[in-house]
Image (cartoon, rainbow, N blue to C red; front, side):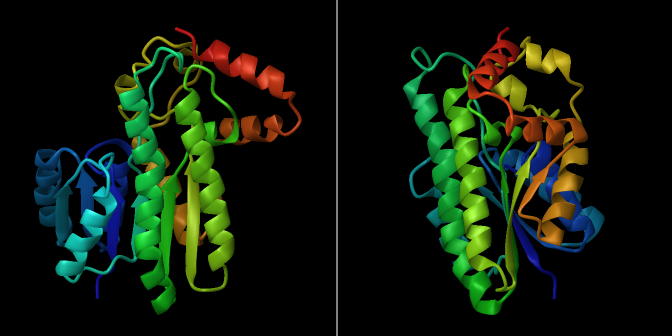
Length: 258
């Protein structure tokens, strides 16, 4: 029987590529994103190409109890989730004092609350049957504070800490939790966060969403706790252990200036 992967933020970028990867492996899909039209177009493409079942849910996960709504819909339809991929998230460039609180509150709700609630809802059934995998998409931002994107970096630090802790709790029970931590990726994230023209993106050549998605999928299937994509990103994260915090703050602020 085909297993089912639930992927949030599946209408573009890493989420879309993960949907294609799971479909190639014969997994049925539950795809969640705000843009229902895009999801339905993807459903037609994937079902025709891979002969798997695709269930789409148009949902703004920054809304209160959105995760519960998705969970209840799947329960009504008798859909059991083997792979949970918490990919949905967004960032906002700018100074905290002047950024929109409404947007930052939505970011916290999506990047932290929805991710945590999905994990809370689907993990018990995984543990009961002794199988299941969860991938939470963090970032290299998870490892440092981020002036000019303070709330975004803080949300990704939560994702990493939460994922590592839950993975330790479920070790030996047939379930694994992986924190995927990519660097800047060509995914549309930068445009949504108004990051065009910042030094960070001019300095590094960004990998494609497909490359990062493939890396993340393999890491999840191996049950790795933390997966940092790219040699330079792994080197940078390692260097943080010996770098003065004050220097890290200065460098991050400099590369995120336009």
